[in-house]
Length: 303
Image 1: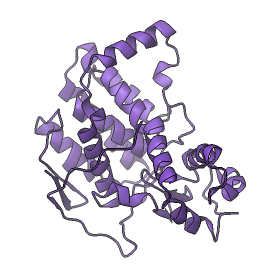
Image 2: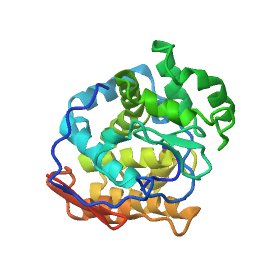
Image 3: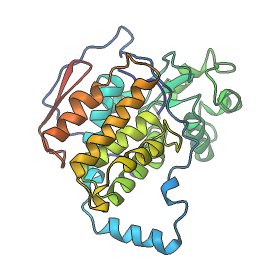
């Protein structure tokens, strides 16, 4: 099921075998919902560090370097992409989504690629601009003027009829797949994991932050990831503040769920209810496998 709203170090390790995955797709190959759009990715990737001195950032780097890899470990990072893909695309095969492109009628134009880059939320434009710097003759470069014009809107002006086909064609190029990986990490994965570690969260908490970054976007407003974290911290201390990890994450998930329902009371929240919350209540703070969860009533399993 593709979320409404749009949502990167070395190429990921090969996927561990998933022993079972039960999922049912729409005729187009994925299911959809509609909900409040996420905050545009034009927001700063690390606003929590904006006021820090160089010495403070160095101290953070040293702290993180001494911590376990957590979600950044190759096997856990692979698992994270699979869990996100189960909620975003009703599949564990996240690598099969590089060429995905579709307007899911969420008011943010085309949604495309492995993390749902959107023409209306700046992250797709940024991806193509960065990719074009190193590969100026790519098949998407000619759409850059149009992408700049439609940025922040749901318009297809200048993109139709050829943009979707060009995206699918470019997704067959290894360099563009790598560019998608890198942009996902730069904007979503790396900042989420870094901040979760600074907040004292283990692997599950790091994943919960990452999924929230993907779904809500890296914004500081009330509906963006950083705004949601700020609200959670007003209600509970993080582990780095000597708070209970489980209690803090439970509140963070409550706040996320409320945000998901705010603009669409009928929004399906099973990515929280029968996945992340279940992991938390099972005490699986290390996100150990084997792992079984449900999203939208569909059962997924990773050995």
